Image 1: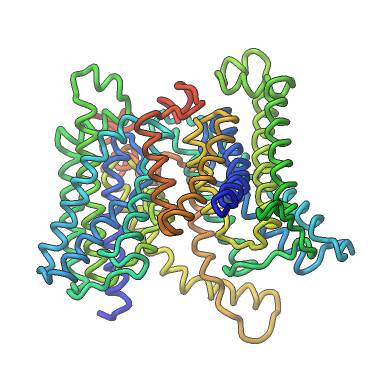
Image 2: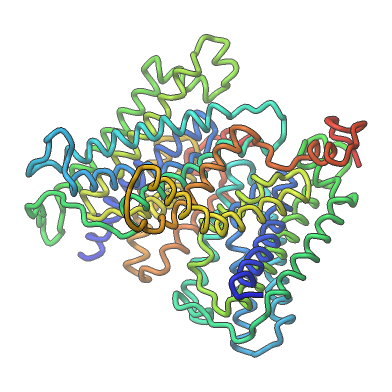
Length: 305
Length: 306
């Protein structure tokens, strides 16, 4: 029974990884860019949401149920931050110097943003973990000895909705066709009339939205936020993305769930300290044995970054 | 010399050696985001031998360096099967696995860390850094350095010219791993304590930033990058409070001003990184710059073959 509970917890935790991993895989799939600001965007939504809920909302919006609104503003901040990142990273993807480290430029810029944003939050709100208010009522269901928290169920439902919506967007809509064309070949897409300058920011908006939502759901479900909360989630999401295959959305979904399950099962059988070895060992193994992951295509990330 | 400056010189020397360890793979076109893993191997190797067997310092550091180098050699074969973003992720994962294994090992003290009995003075680290710097400058001037550069600029053409690109890259990983291990061993003996939290992912990020911002084209790059970014926080330690005081004075705020938050230094490092990538993505020091300083106009701008 405890094992079933742990499996359920694994799926719930995995759903957070899934959302962040989808954000990672989207930027890699479309822009061939490993965006290290993603963990920070995740953290930003949670911390800004907490700060607003704690110190009160502007415009006299504070009330007994102000925390969902605060989280909404947190997600907005994370989308805006993502757009700022776009200005300074992807815009400079192509350099005139022809140096082969050029593929590292957006990646290194995003590392710079990671340092700036995370430390600004630290300066503003301190380094300590903070308790997020969240729903006051005890919303736990007991189904035959298994405890299910209703916010977690809602989150899981939301995550499924987001992924299905994103798949629809990429497969069916005009924007999605543009994005897939850029993923295939940016120059050819440009020639054929895809306005790269207008379509690329959409990737970053989606990234901000996904990370922001994940951060907000994490704050509600686990009741705690801190400036460091993105580091662990972000790195595990990277592991999930690689296991599923870079550039594949359903791969990221499966990979995120696998990592969540492995984490919970490792804790259950071996204790909390071995989680790192299990998750990262799985990642190394995937990279060495099947670098394209479970669903990935061989071409993405090969040669150029 | 005061303890403060001795400490800074030690950190500077360690960072320079560490930066050269990451520079070698990067100079062959392989981004290594697992520096902390190699450094941890060197540090824990030295700490373990010193604490458990009481071996003399040169032996402990030497063995730690050797183990890190061999690890670099062995891990290079599977690592180099991956490319681009996969390689970055694989090196990152390598460092995390090393940290995880050490954290779970009772021999290495787990989360408690290990204390290191033998202490080395600051000048040992400085001498080591000098030797390493001279060695790298020599290495870059040899035929091996030339093939590294060629592999960095165009792997396929270099391969077609009959250069064993894979061999060069593996060697760069092995020597780089050994140097990062040396930095770790010096760290262990200089600070007499190692804990795995000091070898986290941020350390790998910082050292890669030193190298990339300094410039990967010449051996001057990592030297400049590591020196600048090690001394910058120390300079900011005095500059930032003065700056904050003057801002408050201009704003007319009375009374004593609290010291600015320590995190500002990292904000500045990050902002500099972003600015550098926009303005000068090839790093601070390039071959062209060196040629211009040396008044070798005839070769300037053409990437002359030395």
